[in-house]
Length: 144
Image: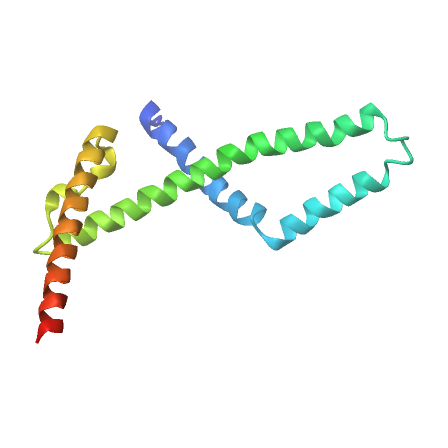
């Protein structure tokens, strides 16, 4: 029997988690999940008088919400990373497919913050120059 390589096993684990995270995020972001969470909070609040609003009663909701929040952060981050990666790949394909596009824009998300700042400054200069040309063009049209 051929055993998969460690790299292939790791990729499979990541694929399974990615699918799980996408499904869980989709379900947990649904109206039904929100209504279910609201129902849990209402039931917890309704049991307050039964437990005399004790510290243990309060700790139950505190602990539950802390655990849920902790896990949701990782699910949301995973799906956000996947979405960002897919969007970047789509944009890279659009840039690659256009003859007039600058191919050095492909994978700019991998640049350092300093390099991105420099690129942003370049585009801000281009925008300023364009705005100035538009203003001159508009003023010439008004004079006619």
